[in-house]
Length: 377
Ligand SMILES: *Cc1c(COP(=O)(O)O)cnc(C)c1O
Image 1 (cartoon, rainbow, N blue to C red):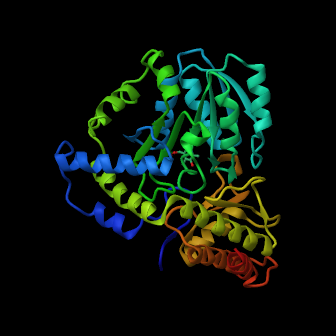
Image 2: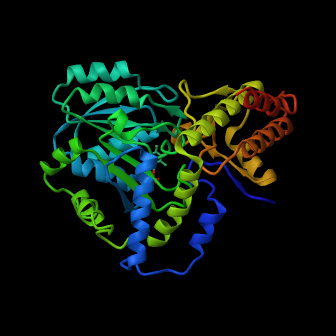
Image 3: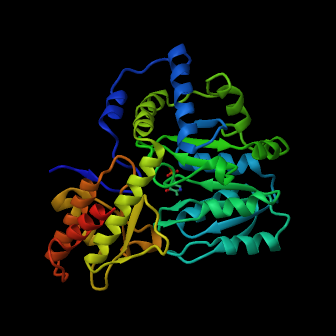
């Protein structure tokens, strides 16, 4: 049976990138390694839509989040945390570890934090040093209006710090134009690489704050990265095999073009939502993002058992809800190296498994609706 990965991280990696990973290991301080890092850094700027350097850090995405917090804040400084799910809560965990004074703007799972909520919080807390947000809340499928957040935060002294770990490369994200001061992403989501790298951009406004903040981290000290990257080098031994492979995936993004890539994701996401609705199922996110579709498990259906069946019988691996959402939602990723026919396959397998479990559904209903919506674009 063919294994097919539809989890919102890790995601499927393109063949040319996998081939890079099969090559012999090389020395990370050689001229060739520097040339590769320089190329990757340039292509990352394109993906981030920024003219600021984008640093590659050897860690999972959370390491990038820790870099953002530890460099930007002194202990006790006030921050506004926008949280709509598990990944907003990850920000809270990192912020607590570094002693931030947290003002939380919290909405229930499935809902989005509106720009109005942020405006109110900023008005009530003029001494805010930074606002922490999540572009794509992967635990619920919600996409946030980071562009609108940026307009509000730009008028203040505060920094806008965004977890774009599953959003970058799956939905529109313009770091400079939207005023994102620190933007964090990871390698294993829409950037089509295995886990292991984090990428962080830093604005001029953020550098001013970082330079005025005491050093609180060694490995994640962004000043070290700034200094080394100016010479296309890294402060510590990088995962150079992954960086070489990242070059291949970034070339794929360059070749497609970032606007085309955003359009492809939103077209597939819209078709997927149409398919899900036609199957008589409900979407979980009130403001769905283009990287993944999150489906509410219908009453009377065992959500976790359905996913296990899909994997065992048909090879399709979707993600369950996390923590207290387990068994309540299904998360189907269509970010990165995924096309319309991959998603059609996943919907078809979901239909089959649901029919086999006695759920009332006409075979092909979701598949047909997907095709119609996809064609109507
Ligand atoms: C996957 C994910 C993370 C966690 O990243 P790790 O690579 O597991 O550290 C954080 N935020 C979001 C939005 C994610 O999707």
